[in-house]
Length: 235
Image (cartoon, rainbow, N blue to C red):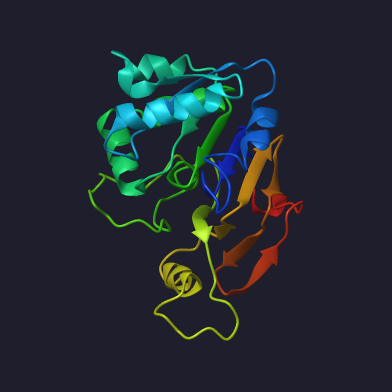
């Protein structure tokens, strides 16, 4: 069982809606009225200033102030004093390499386990699990470890997609890649469809958003779960 409070979002943008529009109601509900400032972790992209400005402008529309960890002289202290932490999407390998280089892995774990709510999108959600081995990203840089924050006893595959029934084969499917992962690894994989989110709090996991998830477990047939279903049995 986990004591952390997490909101793990598959994607910050979905077709036909503005940036974060589909998940802002869930973010606001998750943070509650008492939290007004968010520490943003922009390391999944190279241009941190531009990324932080984009996030700050968007969250300001909903009354939230944003400070980016990359702008602090002491980023470890910034993490340890954060009211809430948001990690944005981008390249998961780059994100993990930067977090390790700045020695922020343990401070993030400490602050979140100490009560700060954590929310992430895409790469920011991927790192909440045990490992980043099920990311979709190219390894453009090499982090010292694939081990992630480990808040959950499974891994996450954001942006999970399946070909429509009867569609011509266009190479290896996401499900086949996850099955290859299970040839060498035992932990479950939760495939978050594009509009899906996981709300983790009070020792439970609830599927939120406009789409569900696909659960992959080694030597077990994959299962689909719809929004509103729980995944508490994974804890």
